[in-house]
Image (cartoon, rainbow, N blue to C red; front, side, top):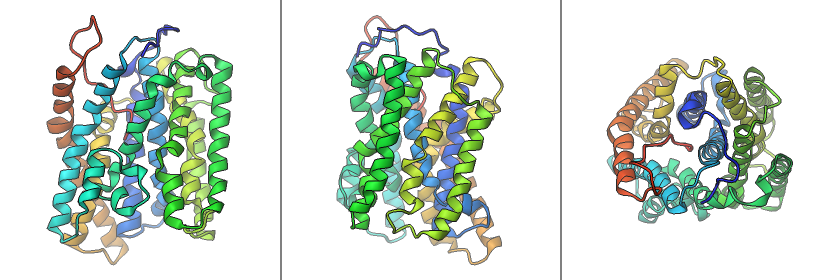
Length: 380
């Protein structure tokens, strides 16, 4: 993977701390989405996060942005890049799948062996079958998409349509238009399962969000100034979430024109604007409120939190019971948040980070470099 055509003098991976802080907030939205859908709603909060699954869209955009930022201008063999990504995501994936299977067995739920294998091989999002998509650890489907993105990423950095500012702009326009067209095309798919699989899981469809992130990452890395600042970008994302509330009340999720898939496919430009604005603020050394020690710590835990939280939710629903009042629901939410986040912190420090270091040291390296250091998770 030769990306040395355009050397860039930009801060580098650890010098975009606001993106790490944003990871925590995106993961929190996903967690609150599952709490709202599975354990009971809380007024106001649940309305705003009812389609919080779009946090995964944010992570797909972020993934493309961070990888483009990190590897633009560098000569890194494709095998080294792919090994680094494997070392980054697979150990925590394997541990979470094992924990999920143990939880399923403990609460008496049947486990799909095919689903477990598909999750461990990161191919589960390719198959429109619930036992594959949800088997093992249900959250692992997004890593199947990420694995596809990683496989194609070395090619994206050398293709002509991302080499100039004009071409990157047109790429972004085409990607956004294609996402809208795909959502509208959902009207042609009558089977609800197939429609949701195609629009929400199928890696080539989700690849559009990753490509948008790559285009934005290359643009900012090479000096582009985002048209909106960070406060405005945050306001746009919040306004979009608010706009989804009446939409969700008016149209059932089973309808093709519901907010369910739209919230994921149509939100990518807003997330790209948010990520670009936060990164640009870091480049300009502006204070964002996202780069404090605890924000960085929580952001680092977010990948493990994403993979663990639903396991904790599933177990506690059986152990404690489904809450029946708003007070009980609030207490249950607090319990799940506290337990899952604590476990995520332990998993990051005892499993995810140490095993990444071991695998990276054991794997291939770029010629002429020393031992590879762990890199931040670009994905969830």
